Length: 413
Image (cartoon, rainbow, N blue to C red; front, side, top):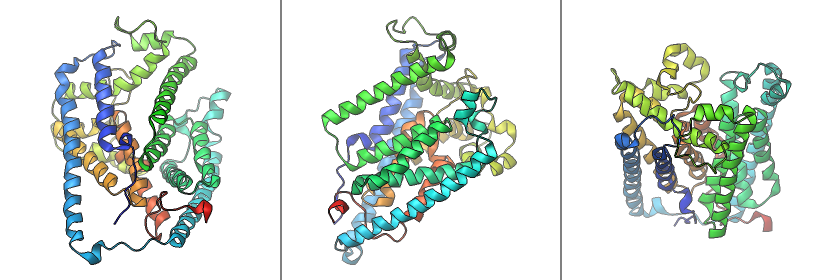
């Protein structure tokens, strides 16, 4: 009989996905910026398609797992669970920890080589006034592979920290966060932070006070993000010119909040613009949706440059993010949006239901952040993030049983 993990409802895939998309549509409907050129009521079917098909995929995954579980329950030999052995659990933790630290050291050595080849790091380029940008850092394809390594090591290390309470597992998460700042990668910084957050929420039920603390911290980060936007531009003139606040924008809010509002709502704005322009693609394919599954050197060789550029679908070239559904729509229209949403729901439902196993728990941390950030990017099919699932297999291979924090107390053994 498997142990139930006391997860928070905040980590549930439906809460994450339906919640974030509902918030974005509500914010869009507030029309606080003239950049938001569409009447959201005319595109309500987009919201309903995205959320309903996600629920459909989730339900389908649960139904399949129920049938499988029911059949295995009728077979006593298949459903028998080995007796828990604390020594095997502890040995498994040490085995995965050794592999993790070795892989992290390999990452460190390869990253030093990347820094040498790139002749520095983006943070120093910024302070030196260099013409180089963060996108210039790293070796194409190799950089994405290395980022998948450090993301996987960080997620496992944070998990082992929760399992054992040993501070040695705190080093990798801290170094990774510092590295994301050093290479000025907001994408990876937010992505790995969310993975650790959802992993934490999937392992426990926080109290109301802790939930309140999470909310306050999130609100503080949003305000900081807005202030940082003002700081980077040097004045409020740029954001006012770009954001074009409407009369509905509250005067008591700092202009930095407009940065946050634009970043959250304009990806949906670009998706609606694409739907309005394309209506329905002339040909059906999966080329755009699967493009990010290929390493850079293969993708640039296979795909024409014009195909990879989406500026034609942007409302404003300065705001160039278009949600996870932009490429499925380019491939198959609204049918592509529906299929991708079903896929995301089924994948989230599968990993959530199987999270009593360490591999699926770590994999769900990746999927949960991808669902949360689906209003911006398609991380589910973005190779540096997706390849974490391979590294989890490598790091956990040969371990005995689920490494559950509720059953392992290595600090006292």
